Structure formats: C-alpha cells, structure tokens
Image (tube, rainbow, N blue to C red; front, side):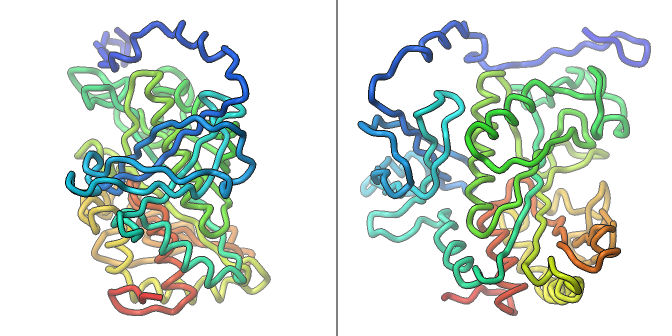
Length: 382
C-alpha cells in the first residue's frame, strides 16, 4: 500500500512467474565456459514488432559479423512461413557484446530470408541498407527517441493503483521521487546493459505519463540506426524478464487523457549541419508535406492504424490527417528545434513515428523523400 494525496491507495502489481524464481541461478553464470562462445541470434518475427532469439555455441570468439555462420529456424512458429516449408535462414547482420552472459559472448542481430533466399515481408533491413548506400556521401545522421510503458503481467501500468488511476499528468515528466518515477531500477539496468553491449544509447528520462519512459539512441549513421534501436529494444525486453514486468511499445497503451508513446526521429545530412543548412531543412520539410500519407503508412507496422489512436492533435501530437511544421512546436508533425532556428543549421525532428515503428522503415522513407526526391504513394524499386 502507498499513501497518495493523504489517503491510502492499494497498489498490487502482477509480475511474471519467472521473476519469482530464485536468482541464485545467477551463480552459474560465473562458471568458466572454456574456449566456447555463446552467440544469441536475434530477429524480427512475422508481426514486424516482436523479437525472437535463440543461442548456439561457437568454437571461437568472432571478431566481426562476417565470421558468424548462418543459421535457421522454424518460421511456421513465428508467423513467417507455413509448416510444410518452414525452414528460414538467419543471416547475421550486426554484432554486439552480450550484457547478460558477458564477454566473450555475443548478441547477433539477423536478417531473415525465405527458402528461396528472398527477404521475408518483415525483413525491412535489406531495402533500407540498399537505400542508405545510395546516399552515403551525404552522411545521413539519425537519432531516435524510443518511448515505452512498463506494464505488469496483467497489462496494468507499473505502479498504478489496482483500482483506479494515479494523479493527473504533470509531475511525472523527468520526475524524481517514489510518487513520481515508477520503475527507475529497470531503466538504469537497461541503460547500463546497452552501454556494455555497445549500443549507441545517448540518454533516458521519465515521460509524461506515469510508468512511461524514454531512451534515446544516436547519433547513428545510415543502417546503424535500425540495428542499434532493435538491439536496444531486445535488451529492454530481457531486462524486464528479470524484473517480471513487460515493456510495451503500444502507441496508446491507456486510452483517454494520457499521453501516447512515439519514437520521434531526428534527421540531418552533411549539408543541413553546415552553415546555411536551414535551407536544406526547409526544403526537406516541404517534400515531407507533399508525402504525408505515405509517411504515415510507414510509421507504424499496421500502416497507420496504430497511430490513429495516438496522433489526435492532443497530448503533444499533431493530427494524423494534417501535416504541420514549426519551431519548438511539439504539436506539429515536424519540429525544428529552437537552437536550429537560431543557428540556421542542424537537424529536424519528425514526431509522427509510433513507438512500435520499424526503424528501418522510418529511416528509409526519410531518405527516399528528402534525399532521393521520390514523390507519390509508392516507393521506387531500385
């Protein structure tokens, strides 16, 4: 029980069964592993949102992703194939240190290919990498601000009263104190695990809705943005396993007068970052305005249906049916930071991507529209 506003409030959290197991098992992780290495292969499943993983033993410590062997899995159990032809290929794409098993063990982010060696429908990395290669001389930089909500196993936000709601939004954003920050231990564990892994995490803060947090990944160049964000999400899910809670990337986990969850994306090119770069920022914003519907479809896994619940024009969002831009305006589709407006160079922030977006899709369409000059509702097949 806790005391809030001078009255007792019952707070009962439902945690996972695994969290109640004795963590003395951790002692086994201190045992020597000889000259073997555990490599955890990670991939995006058929939902375009879920992550799967499994581990294999290597007889050597890989120094680069090129040294890692391909592997396979049962795609019929991940919504990626039929049972009659279920073998899928795992193609290692990026490698990180494993913060759970520690050195010399690895986390291996993989692309997924079908039996015919074609990318699966949710393997968006292949096309993104191709597009990034076309503009590598422009040095496209990204930073993504990943919002998420900590839930109990019953789907109720962590720390919320079991029979009601916490006080209204206001004191929770960047808040400190037990009555304002719900779940900081999880956030700190995730942050340190990302640093150990080599994920380019650059910050974190409590968000506007209680039990909602944000971490930022970047600056990343090109394809690395998607790689680092997906691995940061995986690490968060693994940390939450130990705490017996769930990390939700639902864009609007609680209906009503509560903030949703986005994945605001910051973008710049070499020209934007140099003196006079504001002109190139404004040119890109004009192009984005002409392709608003195309971007909305790419900014959540359900083609915009998830973002309908979030982009209402309220709670620091733009309206999903309207394109807007402004300096320091968090109610706009595109925000130009105040310092950028003053210095006439820098970057812009696209506030439309949902928390459950695929970062490969988001970064790819920004390049297609802003740098490759694509128009219309369909991407060009390069």
